[in-house]
Image 1 (cartoon, rainbow, N blue to C red):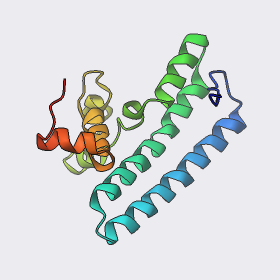
Image 2 (image 1 turned 180 degrees about the vertical axis):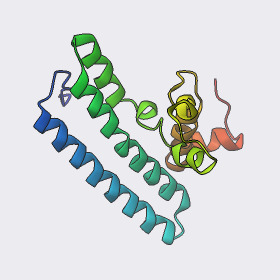
Image 3 (image 1 turned 90 degrees about the horizontal axis):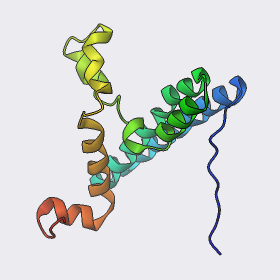
Length: 146
């Protein structure tokens, strides 16, 4: 029997959105703490993967804000799609580096939201390499991608 975990796509109350933001932040911190333990014990690929998972959990907070502001079913569906997308949740990861290089105005950060930006996919691929042998082999040339 195939398990049915069911995916929710509807509106959430303000209280549920706030709860979701708090839970996501706590989980992001837990994943980051786990990544540090792995790193400190020389488990670098796993540490990187767990750190990336922490970034993705942190990325749920702005998407939950989108859910709070959704005006119709289409916007709700798009926000839930983003919530379940690894690349959408990791779109903000270069922000700190951009800030350290002088970005201060909203226009300076526009590239983070470019639909053709590569940075979310690079991060996802790095996570894959840290976890799966096929991704590692492809990166090192041991197997060919189709």
